[in-house]
Structures are given as structure tokens and as C-alpha cells.
Image 1: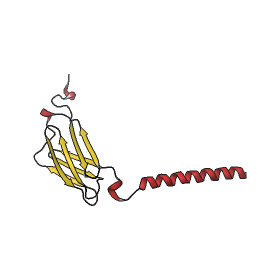
Image 2 (image 1 turned 180 degrees about the horizontal axis):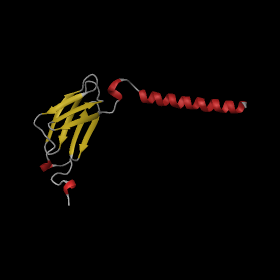
Image 3 (image 1 turned 90 degrees about the horizontal axis):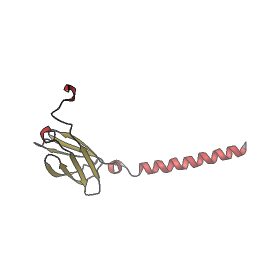
Image 4 (image 1 turned 180 degrees about the vertical axis):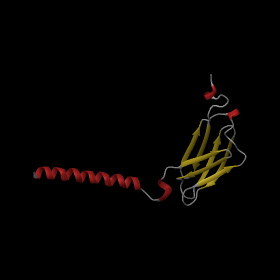
Length: 128
């Protein structure tokens, strides 16, 4: 009985050490500096918002689609960016193609949004 108790205690202790190491690795630092940068995009007119960037980081936003553009935004203390491109619309079916929006920070943060617009012109629901 005592051997089983000793073996179970050893397994429990090893599991606790592994869990503690995993938790420490997950926490790392604090704030948005450890968050993976992400972009959310509204295509018409083009508006981009991002989270998870380094606080105060200068982020270059590059748009490639029917037209191209680039601008720079400065991340807030919370690691957030936002940028509008008034008059730029990327949802036009007549020039549909792959849309790629990349945000690259000067402190190493990087996020990308990729979207293939839906097919235009043929309504599959009306096909014979």
C-alpha cells in the first residue's frame, strides 16, 4: 500500500511541476505585448483595426488588392491600431481578386489578413 502511495505522490508531483512550467510559459510578461497581433477589416470603405501590437510601435499597413496603398499607424499603450482609407473600396466584383493586408511593426510584430472575394456575376441559386 505504501509503495502505491509513494508512486502516486511522485506522479502527482511531476504533473504539478509540468503544469506550473506550462502556466509560467503561457503568462510570460503582461499586457498585449505577448498577444499575437490580429487584424479586423471592413472592406467598403476600407477600415483596419488591429490588436496585440507592441505599445508605441510604429506599424506599417500595406494593402494589396484591386489597388494598393500603405500607411503608418502608431500602436496605443494597449497595443491597438486603427486606420481608415476613405474612398478605397475593395469589394468591387468587376475587379475581384485576392486581397492581402499586412501590418508590420518596427518592433517585430506582424499580422496579415487575406481574403478571396466571392465569385460575382453568376447566381448559383438561379442556375437551371
